[in-house]
Length: 141
Image (cartoon, rainbow, N blue to C red; front, side):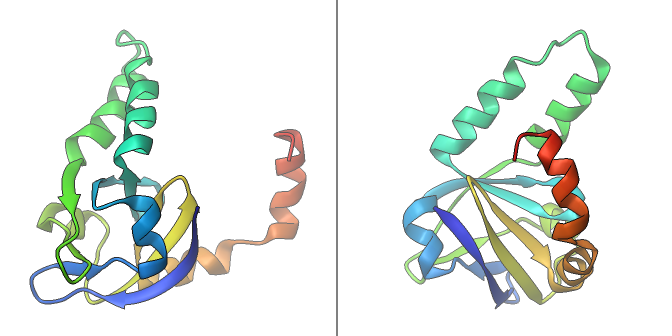
């Protein structure tokens, strides 16, 4: 299960260390793409296939569905860990997520999110479980 919050730094080549606790579940090879809220999503190959299947089922005649699919597929890249447990984040994805040096990696059960430290700190400050709890009840949680 992909869980936890980890702080790491990008090196000068745009490589990031995958936290040891996440390596086994994400696998040696995975997909990185643009995520929601200004972060990056990392999917294991299996989870990407599940997500990809859902996107393929969206109606091609629906403009929002086409734009949603474009968003994820256009930014997607294959990636893999090197012998030191690092992976390269392409310059266009680093730019999209405004990744500079300090990066936060968050396990989100079926995916990993990669955030700039500044964006993550702002996001965490906006999270209030008490405020969200009522809305989640409507979703059956």
